Amino acid sequence: MKNLFIWMGSIIGIIIIIPMILIQSCDIQKSPVQKTKQKILKNDQKVHVYLQNQKKVQTLDLEEYVKGVISGEMPATFEMEALKAQAVAARSYAVSRINAYKKNGNQVHPKAELCDTVHCQVWLSKEKLTEIKSEQWMNNYWPRIEEAVEKTSSMIMTYEDNPIDQPLFHSTSGGKTENSEDVFTAWVPYLRSVESPYEKDAPHFTDDETISISDFINKIKQKYNDCTIDPAKISTDIAIVERSEGGRILKIKVGNKTLKGREIRELFGLRSANFKIDIQGDQVKFTTVGYGHGVGMSQWGANGMAKEGHSFEEILKHYYVGVEIEKMK
Image 1 (cartoon, helix red, strand yellow):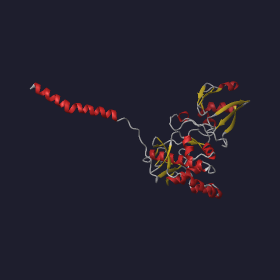
Image 2 (cartoon, rainbow, N blue to C red):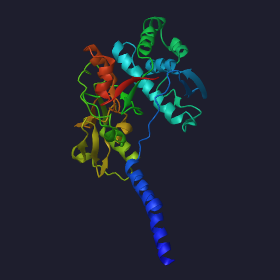
Image 3 (cartoon, one colour):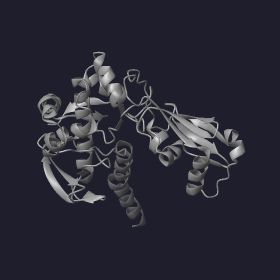
Image 4 (cartoon, rainbow, N blue to C red):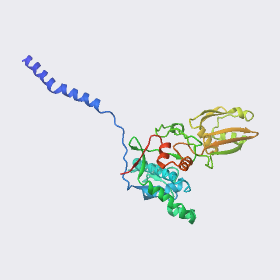
């Protein structure tokens, strides 16, 4: 009887247990962790925009929303290919917010994926533009904005088949854009530092700001009360420690503290964190290069590329490394 039980146990092991082990082993090898794939939305999307001043949510067609963003974010006098590039960037951003917040809205503005301020993208309604712009502007430039949106209708940027979620842009890079992690800490594969050679026409390619040494020290101490600076040794008490690949200051020594270039930019209202400091008598002189955070597409650089004959696709693929341009279904 004992031998019978042993024999039956062996048969069960061969028929049931061993195949189960083999199946589990195969499943482990053939089921790697999958990346979350974002949806490429349908092209008839509605967007919900929180109007900051009116404290209400407005529902818009996506394409109409994009027209209002171009009006608020880029000079309508720019080249058509630059306007088209801005349209695709604006639409890509809107789609990323729809993917992220369509169900519950953005926590900063519930019930709306987007708002009409720089928190998202500046958006101006046609009615508002009629109020603040001349009749000549509306006749000459509104049709150009409509054309840029219509010629790129439904187009967004994707990276590895996913809609990109950080199509950042800024006014002027100063000659080279920034890696995302040097400005915003997060590494984003398509936001890499690239040359931006056609910006010389930008009104704020370089700027000067001057402040007295006493006001400089007072502002620093108001913000950082444990900072000690000797006015007599200020030229040696201020030293740039590290710059990014794009030229913006990552670390700067001010007295006994090491600060971020971005902190100095914000404290003194500078146009860029790419700056140098000169002590001239009893004055501190900042010379800035570029305007804005420097990540993603330079708008003045895009306009310069358009003047050189580059298409909007070429502009976008230059500033957003490795992206593709796809149409929503």
